[in-house]
Amino acid sequence: MDIKTLQTDMVAAMKAKDKGRKDAISALVSAVKKAAIDEGCRDNIPEALVGRVVLKELKTAKEQLDTCPPERADLLEEYQLRHDVIKEYAPALMSAEEVQSYITEKFAEVVATKNKGQVMKAVMAELKGKADGKVINQVVAELCK
Image (cartoon, rainbow, N blue to C red):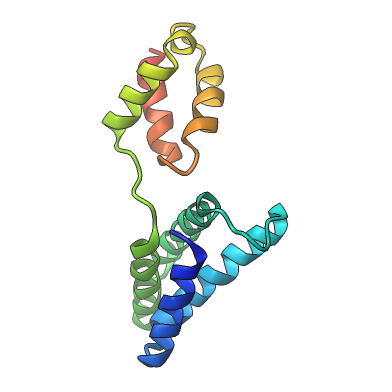
């Protein structure tokens, strides 16, 4: 996923007068640009950064959806739309089985120590943005038993 795709989809949503979709994509574009400025790569934004920001925004949208009171149907509808739009752009994450095979293949010597902290430190650097942190934590906990 690159920033150009987000921007063209935002323009398409504007032309279609789809305010909810446009707002969600616009927020994504803004978040990506802010992260790019913070990391000092304003002109050529790497796809990995876009993916990381989209996942972060997806997590935020999910939290909004989960914490919204059920009697606020208007807000629930808005948050659900935002979550669904962001989910379209989120990169596919590795499953627990894929994470386990990757860890046992690449980090066999670190896993052998049974030190969860060391394993997590090594694995998270490699899998950041490719797999959910909770899934990685669960797999590492199983491997370190």
